Length: 537
Image (cartoon, rainbow, N blue to C red):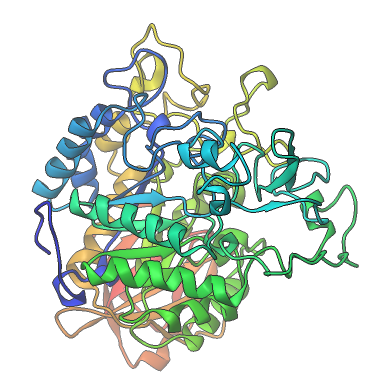
C-alpha cells in the first residue's frame, strides 16, 4: 500500500490476513512529554523502534480525539482533532509518518454509536426541538424500559432534558448520547470522518460498539430475561436485548462503513460480543473481505482446556470461507489481562503460542508480551465508570524498566493509574535481555509467523489425547510445522505415528528451554505440563 497522505487501492496491495496488530491504550503506554501522569503521542513515537523489534505490523490506537474523558475517550467531543492530553495534529501526523517509515500501519478507534454530550452536534440538538441537529440524536417524550450498559444497578438508558421536556437515549453513560443512524445526514457525517482520517494516512479502523447503531424503529419495551439472577448477572442483563441493538439494519450500516474503508485500501474490524452465527452475517456483508468482526471467543471462554479450545476454534473455521480474515485478541482494555484470567504465566505463554500459530490476525494488547497482570486499584484511584465490572486493573501503565514509575513517566509524575507491583521483574528492559522471557517468546513467535506461515487454515492432527491440542500449519517453503499445546497440569504422552514421520526439528517451546537443532522421535513424544511445542516436519 502506498504510505502517502492520500491512498486508494485494493485488497491485493496489503495482505491484511498476515498482519499482527498491537493495541496501544495511549493514556497508559508512555509519557514522553506529559508530567501529568498520562501517556502521549510523543511517547508512542519514542517507542516505535521497540514495536518494530517486537515484530508487529499494525498499531491500533484507542481513542485519541478531544474528549471530557468520562469514558476514557469513548465520549468523543470532536472527531476531527487530537486530544491535547495526547498531543496535537502535527505530532500525530509525525507518528503516522514515522510508523510508515518502519512499515508499521496505523489503525484508529472509531466511535460511531454515540458522541460526548459536549459535542457541538449534541449541544445544538438539545438547544430546541426545531434545531436542524435535533434529529441527529434519539429523543422521545416518554422513555421505554431500555437500560444502559454502564450502571451497576438497573438504570434507564434515557435521560430527561428539562430545556425541551424530552428524553434522549444513551446506551452507555448519560454523557454519551446515541446518534440517530436512521438519519442520512448522520451517516454522511460519519463517513466523512472516516475519509478525513484516511486522507491523513490512517490505514485501518476498529469500529467501537457498532452493534448499537440501529435500534428498532418503534422503540418497543424489551422482554424480561427469564434466566436472569440478581447478584450473579450484570443488571443490564435483566432484559433480553432484542430491540435496542444487534438489528439487521445495523449490520448493514457496519458493512457500509467497512466497504467505504476498503474502497480506499483500508481494513476495519468490528467490535461485537456476539455469537459466531451473527459474526458470519457481518462477513457476508463485506464486499471484499476487508471488514471483519473481532473473534472474542477465546476471551469469553471460561473453560481453558484443549477440548474446549479446539471446539471453539475449529467449529468457527468450519463456518467461514477459507479466505475470511479472523482478527483474534486474547485480551483488551475492557477485559482482565490474559495471565490473570487464565491463572498463570505458563498458561499465558501457551495462549500466546496458540494465537500466533493460528490462521488469524493476532491482536495483542500492550503488556501481554511482558506477562503483565491485573493490578489492584484502590477505590480512591479508580477511573472506570463501569463500576460493576472494573476495567482499570488491565489498563495500568506499560512497564518499561525497573526505575520509579516503571519508566512510563518521569519519576516525579503521578501516573493516572497505579503501576503493577511486578514491574521490577516484568519490564521491557529486563525481558529483552532474558532469552527465556515472555517478551523473547513473543518476538520469536512473531518472527516465525512472519517468516514461515502462509494464509491457510490449520489442520487438526489426531493424537489420542484430549488434553493436548495439536494441529499442522503449512509453510512458505512447502513444508509443515506441527504445534502441540499441552493444557494439562501433568506431563502428557502423544502418539504422532499418523504423521508417518520418524523425526522432526524442534523450532520452539513456550519455555524457550530447548535448542533449535534438537531431533526427536515423533512416535513417542512426552510433553511437559502447560508447555507448547513447535516442530518443523
